[in-house]
Amino acid sequence: MVRWVQSMEETNVKRDEFLTTFPGAAVLASIAPLSPAPANGLVAGVPLPHSALAAEATQIARASEAPEIFRHSLRTFLFAELIARARGVDHDPEIVYVASILHDTGLSSAHMSASERFEVDGANVARTLMQKHGADERNIETVWDAIALHDSSGIARWKQTEVKLVNAGVNADFGGYLDEMQRADIAAVLRAVPRTNFTGVFIDAVAAVAARKPEATGNSFVTDVAYRRVPGFHLVNFCDEVRDDPFKGYT
View 1 (cartoon, rainbow, N blue to C red):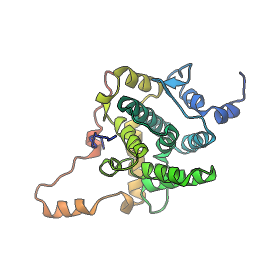
View 2 (view 1 turned 90 degrees about the horizontal axis):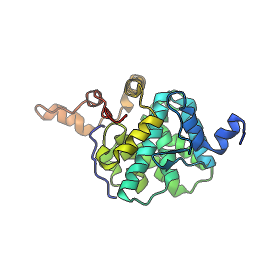
View 3 (view 1 turned 180 degrees about the vertical axis):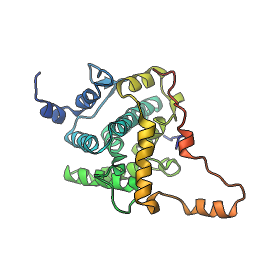
View 4 (view 1 turned 90 degrees about the vertical axis):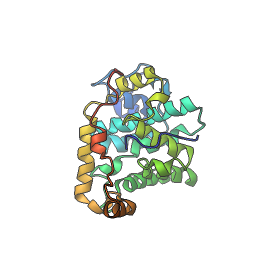
């Protein structure tokens, strides 16, 4: 996942009211114990969407995920937006946000099905939510694709712009695309949304999925054939790829 294909064509209110009416600032405020939230509600100049749809997507992710994985989802959005800015890509930030913030909900026990891949579970969470909010069917399908393909660069790069961006944002949080963003912006994201303990918590969550439903781990039949028929065939292991911190020196 780390070395995925790196090309892309392409006041005073009660706390509950605050979370509902202005989720962008609320999301940042929720991280305050680890790092002060920017006073202007922006991270590296990136605003967080604050529609009712974005607010409920945020609440779903925060309620079901470990804090480390929720912060990964938020960094995914921020990095996706920085990549879009660097490339001058026209896109819908709300679609990117909803897909980014919900892309790992399938790893949580609250949204884990008995037999589907975790990517599909997360995509289905998003579909149900967007249907509830009366979203356009085309946007629903784009978000579904973005979540289902967030870890499949070879396919995602052929899809809609928002799908490519979510894939790129996920990749960036594992060390991809760093040369396409400003160093100061990357550092700002890491200060506002710390990556503390993320790798270990994430690997444990994925291992729990594999233990519960091994047939839904996403192994390709091509890989099966290669291991049986191609002498010396070996794929790089994700755990080895994320062993070293790609963000050393950014903070």
